[in-house]
Amino acid sequence: MATAEPTPAQVVEASDLTRVYRSATGETYALRGVDLLVSAGSLTVVAGPSGSGKSSLLTLLSARERPSAGELRVLGSDVAGASASALRRLRHRRIGYVPQRASTGLFPHLTAAGHVRQVATWRGSGHDDVEQVLASVGLAARADHRPATMSGGEQQRLAVAMALVGSPALVVADEPTAELDHGNADLVLDALAGLAEAGGAVVVSSHDARVTDRAGRLLRLRDGVLSSETARARETVAVIDSAGRLQLPPALLARFPSRRVVVEADGDVVRLRAPGEPT
Image 1 (cartoon, helix red, strand yellow):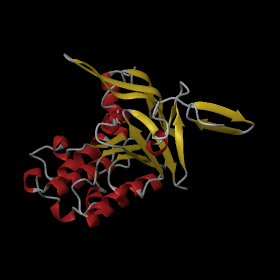
Image 2 (cartoon, rainbow, N blue to C red; image 1 turned 135 degrees about the vertical axis):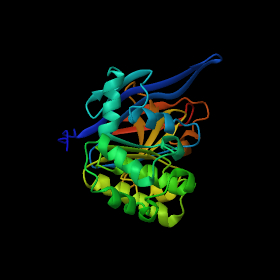
Image 3 (cartoon, rainbow, N blue to C red; image 1 turned 180 degrees about the vertical axis):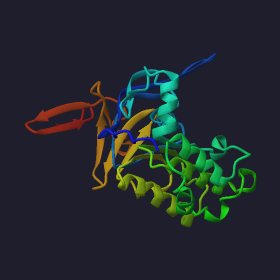
């Protein structure tokens, strides 16, 4: 069995992270200057409306794409500058990934247990925990079944089992409970939370209140920008990016229809007011 590499305290370090998709019709900004730290032992949930950039962010954090601009280090590796083979080794050995469409990561000729064993081999892990990880997501009785005989929800849980086997340092999961009922969603969330409690870092995107309620930290994206952050204490803070831009939560943004704000400092207190409002 391979010797486990040490996990840095900051599993993800992103600064001014930008992702641009180019086509014949022009450029689309999926992410615009996101600053983000993800610590070992944390469960982070990324929320936001469709098109807000959640999937693009998770694809970058899982080292499946490179940023268009900005800096991104995942488990100490420079994602923008590392070679393709180095990123492939990083993904295989240390990052678990659950795609939004679970079927895209499955092989038709392998059983559920065969999928998990294959990933365990990539991670230099033994096969002793294959049955355990399948049981943790409620698939013990489906271990000998192939994807074609499994439901969409079972395939989704298999993708989670593949992401978790061998206790990777980082698991990134895109809408992992989208096709699950409450009971199976709880199994998946318990398994993900268990990895975080054991010292791994987990980043999940979701619209599901069952997921956001379990978050140690909730990040909200809007139009490719990180707009707010809520910690376990449920104190929501607005985000100031590295360029000094303040992202107001939508409820407050409505107070500034001109998209202009007067900033006033009075000792330790900073006030924001719309232009023309009385002081």
